[in-house]
Length: 153
Image (cartoon, rainbow, N blue to C red; front, side, top):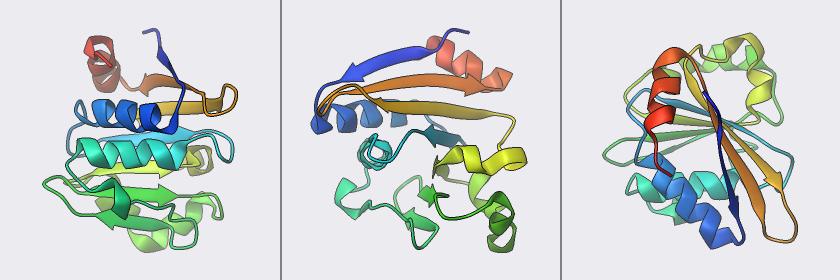
């Protein structure tokens, strides 16, 4: 399965792409976000929230709290692993959020190491000049790969 790639040219376009992406997600999905500081990971999650009918104004990076929960018809669990190691997740019962009734968005997913789910969405964001971002969508696991192949973003 080939990855899908998009280039956004403004913050608002990144939000809109995140919103479109959220509409193909299902309860229990894990979205692993990759990218350097300032690459647009949190902006993309704000867009996901909008697509899930959650106010994007509620969304902020949970760098110091580890996880924020945004309530909606389908809850959004927003993790930021920038300051922690994978084993720090054990004490918080991360499985409830990764495999529960909501959707988990995980910034700095490379820090999940062996805890990365076998089935997950992988979204890589990269600077492409000024406010432009190159955003690549890929999947891990057959079920998610099949959904990505049918996705229209």
